[in-house]
Amino acid sequence: MPERLNPHHDGSPLHVSTQAPALGEVVRVRLRVPDAFGPLRWVGTRSNPNREPRFDEASVVASADGWQWWEAAVEVENPVHGYRWLLVGDDGRQHWLNQAGLSSVEVRDHDDFKLVAHAQAPEWAASSVLYQVFPDRFAKAAASTGPGADGRPTPDWAIPAEWSDPVDLVPPARSAQLYGGDLDGVREHLDHLESLGVNLLYLTPFFPARSNHRYDASTFDHVDPLLGGDDALVRLVEAAHARGIRVIGDLTSNHSGDAHEWFRAAQADPAAPERAFYYLHDDGTYESWLGVPSLPKFDWKSPELRRRFIEGAESVVARFLAPPFNLDGWRIDVANMTGRLGDEDLNEQVRRTIRATMLEVNPDTILLGESTNDAASDFQGDAWHGAMTYTPFTRPLWSWLAQPGSPAGGGIGFALAQVPTFTGGEFVAAHHRFAAGFPWRTRIATMNALDTHDTPRFATSALPGTVPVAFGLAVTLPGIPVVWAGDEFGLTGVDGEASRTPIPWGSEGSADVAPVLDAYRALVALRRAHPVLATGGIRWLAVDDDAVAFVRESADETLLVFAARAASTLSFESAALSLEPGALLRSDAATAMFGDAGLATSDGLVTLSATGATFAVWTLPGVAAPAW
Image (cartoon, rainbow, N blue to C red; front, side):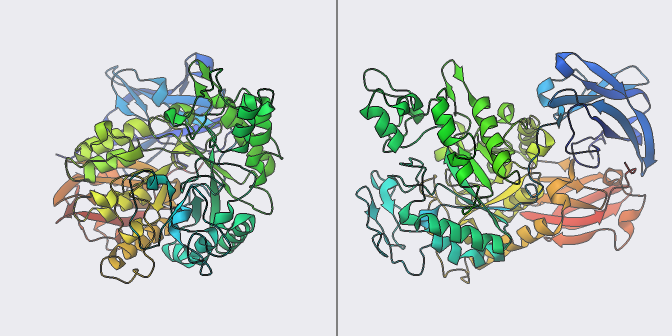
């Protein structure tokens, strides 16, 4: 049976009068209620300013296509102002609606809709398609033949590798194997990024270090000479900008490397100012990231550390956002653990200081924070624009589309390194649960990653035919879709280290790679061509074990999305599409944009059907919403 139509609200421009309210501003919010929901005695919002509940009554401002539009005025009294809807039926029954869904019992503040008065993300953030590069494994410049070439001596910690060598997962090679990729190699392959349609390049760390991953920086003063040095980063950013591609870097705010000049100064002299940068104990031991000795942890109580690293125009954060480097933002590594140890929690101070510095140097920059589990409490709009997290999208998606019983080691974070098996309903439920804690504008700047440099590659364990389904969901659900370099080549890997495979340049036209590459290009093009996928609202229409359907909506356009992992059929009431009666019967009402699936309408129902793993998208007219 089709699911019951329910009232709907989200943070998109269809339902909220401004995406950037000021503190004290009155914002108008709207709720859509289907006629079939029944008569209502009272509708309004319940806010909780200063932790004291307040109710604002709504009134009907329009009726169209089987829906009533209710509007209430909400004053933004706190920088993060939560609100939910209360609907009281003629029978006196109360219904509460927040981001977790409709409930007949009172709901948690944690899941409320939120208006955020902090400085918003740059306008381009939500429309980004991000491409992640691990510099050592992406490409070598034409002038380079490998580590030790082009005047770059192989460092004493490194084990040189040829580009065609397999990745060695056994220590010390696991972190010491060096293929010699560099920033000029990235620049020389910008044609590939442009052909994919990506417009945001994320580089994992480019600072000198004693590992191939460079998360153990030995200085933050300059770019690693093995990558080409400062000039190579300047050349890359300039060339990327000329193609309309922005570039962000990667900073480790939780730790440095044990070879870092600050840490060595701290160890050498108890009176050195750097001594206060770390948690050094009298017995010579120190705190480090998860007990790894090469990654000593920063102590953010130090004003001098803040001054050098994150605070003001002379800091590390500022320097690489300003000329001549002109980076467009930062991804912050281990953002969740930064400033936290035992009874100390300086995380909010650190993240707000980083963002304040970025606003001072270049407000048109993005700040993404890594927090691989439930990230919502740190991501309320005061600093991070979006999260690199795996709970709202990555893990639920794997659980629905991976082979049953698949192992999944590395940083993806599955319990006991095993992928659980979800139905479509469980996928949607998990996605809802973890997305509900984010303000809308944080949600649309949060990364939708199938995988990253820290995880197994999705294709390793994907059900047959589901790679386009998975990436299709990455580009159509709210958030920034992510291509981890090599996914578009169909690369596999059992954990994060095994997934850091050199890119097989020259294979683009092969029978194995070309179809995958074509699918990625087509799906990125879909995302870039339809702004509703960046900022439009979302409503789920139907869900069963093997398929899900939803719409992304704006006043200009609606996209109907159908994703199936196996042969399946979904039906829902045609009224759910907010179209005038009979609109779907017109030949021009629904235009297929991607995929091969059935769409039919009969007796007031819309039916979507697939003969196997399928991802399909149709464009429909925009929602007939009353003007603001």
